[in-house]
Image (cartoon, rainbow, N blue to C red; front, side):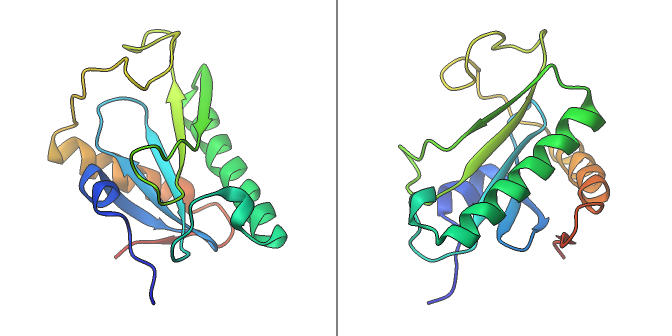
Length: 143
């Protein structure tokens, strides 16, 4: 059975590309940038369900993405979380947070109004992030 993205993730994000283990998504929510890493594994729900080598790969990819968000966007904090209460497919949020954002200093969940970027801004940010993530070993942009 091939890997497929959960329908809610597919509806709420734009695919940026792939790292060796994970698909990289950009949330459409007008906050952040807010990236989501999804290991390309079938029926995966928890990080500890990955073999140890893939757990380490996930940490490497997560750290690389967080470093890009911190450096390129001068984020005040990078929030990283794997909740999965509504979407059981394992996915790890990487959210660039800023002291002036709508939810600061609280958590994102339940503290935003759900406003999404318009299509032109989403596409521009997608292209910008593809270029920035292109410096990470093993990254390939989505076609």
